[in-house]
Image (cartoon, rainbow, N blue to C red; front, top):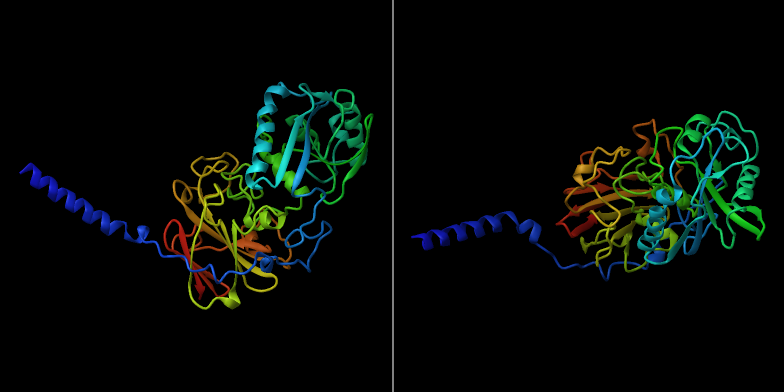
Length: 412
């Protein structure tokens, strides 16, 4: 009797499983291989609405620092007589050095190397008060006592007393929280031009940045690696702050968010992703529905992690698969993340898609709730959700989610 009952239960269990799982387990053979184009076809070139920083929405990318090869980074803890440093920099920042270097190798697929050095185990005292190193009207700075280049050289002179300059591409000044909060302390060089500095070891052309948002919010000075990477990428040509600024979906949208990944569009422009990671499709050549297996951009599965559907010479739709990964945790509730849909990404694979027009203007107004839709790129939404569950259509293209690993792309 027990044996018969066990058999019945097994049959019922199998029956229930078959009824629940088929849609998820159903895998259709991919059929896109002969329909894709060379990646160069999807290199949309920016020709309009180019600001003083040069091309950063489309090809070719432009920045003060290269996107491949080796970048030498110096982390410099600077304090002031009217804003003394608190804590031991050696204990505070050594873990950041490791994370910065690991992040670059991981997301560039080894094409970019960050070599990061903490130049001092103690705070280096600036020759003047914190109010001397500000930019009027930026980051809380009310007045400007001197040119940024002069201020940077003054700080370099103090660094030169304790550090032997050999290689330096990017210098990150860490200021005490109260310097930023009370005085708006902020140092910055242009994102497309490098500044010449003088040291006892000779001249160097560098980019520099110093600020962690202390004029707005108190960030943990013991965890600086992600904001450093965010700002450094601007100097490497990443425009960032999209497809939806403030979301937790990438380090250039919110460095304090759930994911420290970069969009595949910017990684493509940077030369990090190639034919093994990306697929280029042309809307004009899509006749029948295309089935594509995808891997996650957060952990680089074996399948392609990004699909570009070229709509025109200046427009594209980009599809990415998302999941938890080495630098992504959608389960965690980050203190500084404004992203109400975080839980839709937790504990499962899902998909996002965004529209890009490299010749539309950049629009960023964090106080405007509809800012995302006015920018040159923005996420497509399924019933107002960024996390796609079934399907979404835009510009004549329909994207359907078949299962956790496959999508279908067709004309709508």
